[in-house]
Amino acid sequence: MSGPEENVEPAQLAPAAKAELDRAFEDFYRAHLRDVYSYAYYRVGNHHDAEDLTEQAFLQAYRHFDRARRESDGRPLRPWLIRIAHNLASNYYRDRSRRPQTPLDSADPIATRHDTEDVVAGREELRQVMANLEHLSDDRREALIMRFALGMDNREIARALGRSDGATKVLIHRAIKQLQEEMEGAGDDG
Image (cartoon, rainbow, N blue to C red):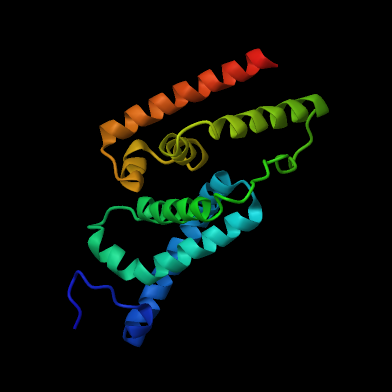
């Protein structure tokens, strides 16, 4: 019998326990797929690699899901999952640091009709924000992505980044301020 600190592979569980774990993980997957994919996409800037990182994150989460549920004491597992995606994205950058990166050239097509000038302005603004995010330190960029792209609250971000609530609040404030300064500086250059 395994202790509370040990991780039991899902395949090693009794059939009924594995079936319950699989049902719970399926619900967890459906609830958080969009968040993990969005996070990965904002980190890597392309759909193909975002899909790969999302798949890797959920595979890793599945292997440790039973233990994470036991150790969570009823707290949401979303920050734990985003932390997995965060670590995988960091590995992605570390592994590709010697390869040249191509910038994100355009946003996805807009589903509803808009004035062409509005569409162009919106895409340009998104391009500027994405470009200026690259000037932020990793922790500041991560915090802004979690806050605004994923809608995570400060406590969830703190748990995902392994920081205190207060340090996270300061981090987000400084990240926003730096991004605003970057955007204003980019506007002055143009």
